[in-house]
Length: 410
Image (tube, rainbow, N blue to C red; front, side, top):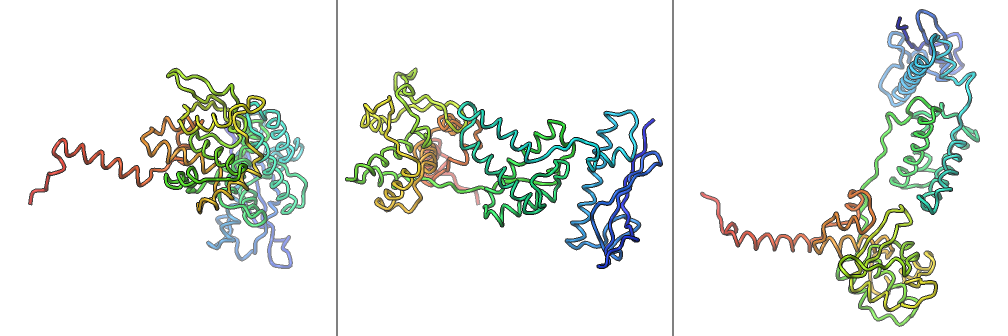
């Protein structure tokens, strides 16, 4: 026989505080037998709707309080459903204890974070990049500091993670850590992955992210126009150090390779393609996805220029910090009012070198080492020159079939 399950909230008026507020108590009833506990939420008795078991009004405070009560009710329902799957007899007391974590093993958030990051660390250089691991460590540190700041604890039970915790963490990232919108969203995405792991492990049965939406704002990544790229390529640079960096940057613009992948590029990564021409065949360090790029003439000339470096290295790439500093000098020297980075170079390859010259986005995606064409769409932009060129072709086709001279009937 199916048991009856119900949850209601009421005020414990005999425990009223000096400020006029009283604690809200949750009562669980299963088959007529009840168990109750203090929700640790307080409200003024004049603001309590006895019939609806909710806080009156539509103020932000009332909505927030009612949201907490709804969440408690949802968690109790989840605890009840979970117990009915595992046990023959389910009582109100068991549901309460499950919700409160009484008599249960505690599963801690930071502890799980450390376990996940430890596994991630072992995958560095195999299936994960060092940068991915470092970002996960930064996220763990932010969560840990948030718990200390907000809850005065070194760790927190996974069962205590709720919507309010997530919103609070988001606010902490915005205000305390000064993270921008997208950086905050990425940290919360990482945090969510830990919560999903807890759910898969059976350590957490409710979904704290059920009513929380994560979204990234579209960012215009920027790229070099044909004229800007020519400015850099044509500039006579007498400083040997800057000339090397200019060449490596241009190589990235003509191959789409990231800084670290150019630094790791060796003789063995240049193969003869099926078409008889030289191709780059390597794996992106960031994603471990294979990248194949037929070498354009400009890229071949740059490799030829630096031929004979020790240890089969193809290009003399300095540290990332030095490279970025030198790129700034080159930008100033060439009168380019854009922040020259290897990210910009990859976007230039996607937009100015390939897409604007009629290379299909699927081909661009393959050369950039993307597994999802949506990622490539972030890189590739349709330039005005490309629109103009495409419309000229269309205009010629319309002329050929006589459609350009058609006029509408009066």
